[in-house]
Image (cartoon, rainbow, N blue to C red):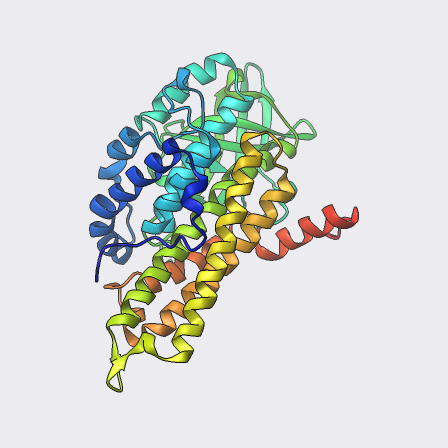
Length: 389
């Protein structure tokens, strides 16, 4: 098929600055030229192309919206959103890799860490010298992270951590983990170098979603850390939840990238596939499907852009993010299912991207807050009555 053609039905491109368009187009070209030729092989093998990490660092996508003083790009949040969009056009696993590194590892160190922690870790993470992971979710504590059983106990001049974390992106390939644990009647965050004795990160296999991504369990068995391993400003459940807000922001943009990839492939396929002597795109039902897909993508683009502008003005709230993540991911998942249907049997082949995106989005709609949990978050904001319990 022809080269990728991004949908811009409402001329939203005109609403971006020159820098924002340049950042988007640079990452778009890299994904097309360097990542997409490899993704089918890695999705099938269940691996992530770690050889591309130096190139990702060179692009400046790790912690791209953090200050330049730590080796980061210092971009605005709309640039970061567009980066996530283009990365997820390649694969949700690629966006997850970058999102975890920036939003869930670098951001909490920058937001809650000591100056020494920032100076030690942020340049290494920005350059890709170190890869990080974020340990919050547990086998029995998903939507209710406050139910975690991982604990940190002080023993003299050390912290001793014990517990397990599940569904951790990048865990097996990381050099550092941000681990959240119950500690002295509250929840605290710890920077855990992965070579620390007692720490292990066995990879979780047999996935049919996010296959081009490393997913791990974290096991902490009497992991001893110095007292300065704690993030000094992170106290209570609000701290890890604020990290998730940063990651969900990127997901709201990223899902649009997957949706646009599916739409473009379905549109091109429908124009080339001849059925009863004319292109599939010449029939009413396929046109109705394409019109609905294009409409939902356009609505999602406007939602994400407004969210980004609010974030840059420091007016974004967690409920804003919940609405954007909830809407854009679910619509992207629905679009991927329709796109898979339009490609017929070809839709299940890795020669095409629609089936891969469809499988990935089944995970994206679940992680970083399920669709239902975000529904309740919005409901609580509207009514003032939490309905979680």
